Every structure is written in C-alpha cells, then in structure tokens.
Length: 478
Image (cartoon, rainbow, N blue to C red):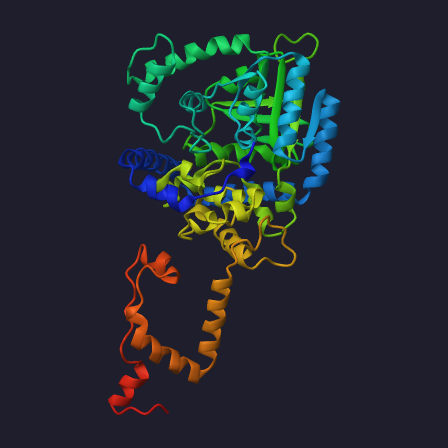
C-alpha cells in the first residue's frame, strides 16, 4: 500500500503549515501545556536523572539481547496459549492479520491505539477486503472520522481545536448537534463507540512492552477503550514492532513511571493492562484466542548498526516532539510518514529509506532539546548528523536504506574545487580576485545560489581582498 511510493516533501509542506495561523495556534497552545506539565512531574533533577538512567539501561539491555529475547518471547507466549506470527514487511503483517480475521469470519473490528498499525495502513487494507475497523481511542476516532492520519504519536488529533471537532461530530455522527462542550463531545463519541465494542468480532491493539520472561503483553492507556478492545471481543490480535521487547517484568516499573510523565504530564497512566494468555477455563471475560504479530519492517537493519540502533530504544512518549522547535511550528502532517517529530526524523529515513525521506534529518536545528527530555537517553541529534552524512557519503559498514541518494555530482565538484582553492595560495588569490570582480553580478536565481537566497540575503563580495587592503595601508604580506 504503499508507504514506499511516498516521498517526503518536508520543505513544501512546512511552508504551507507556517502560513496556517489556526494550525500554529492549536499546536502552540497544546505544546506549551504539555511542556509545563512535564516540567512539574520532573521537578526533582536527581530523581529524573536516576529514573532516566534506569529506563535507558533497561531498554539498552533488552536491545543488546534482542534476537535471544524475541525467541524467548515467542516460546513463552506460545506456552501461554498466545499464537505468535512473524512479519518481515508491513505487507506480510497485513496479510497475517487479514488471514486471522478471515479464518475467524470476522467482519467488524474494534481497534485500540497502535502506531504500528498506522505504519502498516492496516485500516485501509482491511476495508479493501470488506472488513470494517473502528478506532476506539478518542483522538484516533476523531481523525478517522476526518479521514486524516495522526499528527502526534500520543495525541493524534492535537492539531484540531474543539470548534473543529464540534463541526466534525455534527457532520459525521447521526443525531449529534453542534456543541463545543468538551464533556458533551466526549459523551457523543462514547455513545457511538459502545455499540462497536459490543458488536465487534475481533479487537486489535498495539503493545507498549512485551515481556520475554513471562510472555506478557503490556498495554497502557487512559480511556479504558484499550481494555474493552482486548477483552470484550472473542478474538484479540496484538501488533508490535520487534523492538518493544523487555527482558523481565521488573524492567517495566521505571518505564511505567517515565512514559506517562514524559508524554502527558500525568504521574501515572490510568490503565495498565497485562495480557499473558487467552481466556482460561472458569474465567468470565477475555478473548478466546490471542494472536501476537511481530513486525520487523526494517528494524533489523537499524539494529545492525551500533550507533543507529539506539533509535530502537524509543518508548513512544513523544516528549521529543513536544519540545521540538520545528515540530511545534509545523505539526505532524508535514512529515508525510507515520512518525513525526525528532523520533520520526531518525526512524523514518531508516525504515523508508534516505531516498524517500532524506530531507527529514535536515529538518532540525540540532538544539538538543529532544535529547535533553528523552526518558531513555536516545542521542537523537547525533543520529541526525549521522543520517545526514549517510545520505551523501554512506559508510562501508552501514546498512541505511537509500544511503548515498543525496549525493550530488555538482556538490561533489564544488567541494573538490573548494578544497583545491584553499590548498593553494595562488589559486585562492586568483579565485578571490575573480569573485571580487563578478561575484556581485551573479543573479539570485542561479541554481547554485537559489536554495540559499530563497530564505537569506545574498552575501556581498568585497571589491578588494584583505591582502589588497593591507598592502594599500602599507602592511607587508610577510
């Protein structure tokens, strides 16, 4: 379906977003609130430093043993009665999920929040095969009604204000009148979704953490919709990237403290769901069958590089984007692909390829705000610089998809000329003399200057070089 067919146009979309005052106001208001709430939660710098070190260590330890832990997770889940499936690509994952649903005769699906299924474009795939999938997370439900993609990985509809949501509900929900009362809007969504939970043939969810030691799937949420999606229907399909594995159940504790405080400024999330098996004899609720789909989709390639592999530590808290001066001004849809913001700038080019998303690592000021707030210490700015390098000069050992695609013969020739000029005093003297004569005559529209002059004033070349001026003042070149 074709995420591969997409190509990022960050510059063009950013220009449109920057000229949308409503969008910018929506993001500014939301981001300011999220940053303030997070700051309150981590007011004690010593506690933040200690907790962050534990969370980062737990994620790093799990990634260091990823192949082994994935096999252990498979074995433990299987022993618990969870059926495990492996998918190398999003197309394979879609086929697996569709096959499970068709075998069960499922026609109606209720979904908990899942960024991996967004990455797969699962809803569209199921719809194309006659299966209706309804998002049960309030934010996801809103953007599904609007026919849009998430603009944030925790709060999918953060780009909309209550007036826009009120108009959407009045248009899309039968019998709903226009109201900007938030409680009434929430109640309208709850009423519309209740029947979907009850009628669903299957539930689909993401996974926050998968515990290799016990074969447990950990899902956290605030609305209760995830719990309904995974326990009420007779069939539950959980979909996750292979990087979400943790070694032990004890490793979850610091991450359960870090994630909600980093994401929404809550001291703890409202619901923590732990699923280790389908319904057992004598139990009154829970699905009769549970399936786990483990998706690679380029993650093994990322894992294979020592520096780039740190990307996979991410726990999807979105703190990096909440504090990013670029994301907060242009919003999530500017990034084209599923994952926006700083984490998207390092993950997307590695999954989709630098040939498709090579402009995204450049959409950063390298201010390091993302690294300062990351709860698992991902060195995002360092990885951004590495990806910029890989785009024009791929390393012999790196397996970055699309590496070298940004290399330009003209740019290579230009830098070779620069090197030659600065290596030879004679050539340097001739070049500066020539630029003093003709440099100011070059038009702004010249291809080699256009990108620079589109946002900056063209530099003015001095008529005389410093050496010439010094000689005129009686100073010797020696």
